[in-house]
Length: 135
Figure 1 (cartoon, one colour):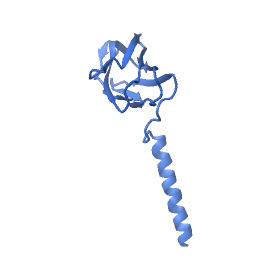
Figure 2: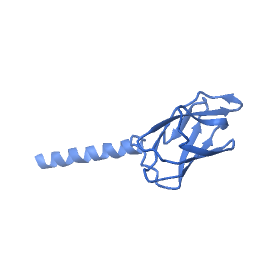
Figure 3: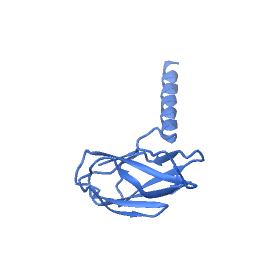
Figure 4: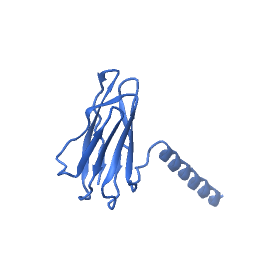
């Protein structure tokens, strides 16, 4: 009986962990690819979400292109703006209403860069969201 109870408890914990990960409860894995993609969505109430909200870039991923794609709105001219001086860590920005890209030199590790996402929906400015990139 005790063995069955322990097995049931282990299964319940495993199921709960899987459910949390499926619901977005887990952290994003470090981006190892040349293009690190961030999905930006704007809902009907002009609320912005990004996935992943905190983008870790793998330590050896030098000159990765970070690409933001949007649905439900459009980026403003400076739709991705870093909150602090990045010391030229990010360069070569490219902008269109539906996609912004920037190159991450990734010369500094262990640094968290906060940035703002600013978009329009139907010509109306939405409240800015403040996610991060973690080098």
